[in-house]
Length: 130
Length: 102
Length: 137
Image (tube, rainbow over all chains, first blue to last red; front, side, top):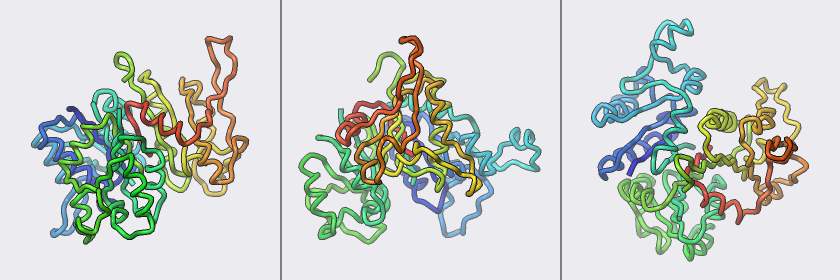
């Protein structure tokens, strides 16, 4: 079965991203497919490589990036939500005259249409938020 | 075609669980995750209400969230099933849609 | 499920507007999603009913007043806004406290018709069960 996953909160303040991460791993372990993980609202904050959590804590951005690398999962950050919150890739940074980008490996910035597409293409869409 | 409802809020803090239970239909599954797991304990102010809903819905609780909050399976209202993340995935697959009560 | 590649999308709105961004960013998904020609319904329950309350004025809090955008939903072919009767009553509201939201029916000489449908809780539960994809905000 094909799953779409939506993450509506950033890391650390709420548990949503942790739960979504463990759920996504279980989807893969169960032999299912992950069509896409879509990050919306403050969920876009999962996609900055500038987070530096304490060493004895989990690094959610890294965990997501590793999952994307190992399983080829599509991690999409909503562009409108990302711009509001300062998550930029190289071309967005250039376009808005910002000095640098901060998008983490394995994440890409795209439009809300990617969320609708996940709803259409996936057999189940599961939302994690607050 | 049944629905898996997920709730992540303590019923003592927000109305998500009450709202979820009011919209769950016969045969639906309800899964308590994150802070919602505190609502699965027996002897709480909402325990009787949950037991009423167990007549029509199957109620589950996510084990890792239970353990994280110091709750044990023997603390739970009778009939509530503990599942792990794999069980969560199975529930999502078995039902036709997943409705999150945030 | 619906025919072909059309699915029934249900947007569930349970939070009041302005105190958090969920209402605004939910509306942004609805507007973008309209281009995908899916079967779209919006549900307003619990504090979500305040999202379509009449007379919203955000001048004093300095944030964007997106309330008028709901009135334009008809232009995006979004015509099914289900409002839970019990949620209104619990908050001391009635239908007259909501914005008039309408659409023009091209099959009926562009007659203006209401997009808001008041439903009771049991009907709202059936609307959830009738959907393919539930997006909660």
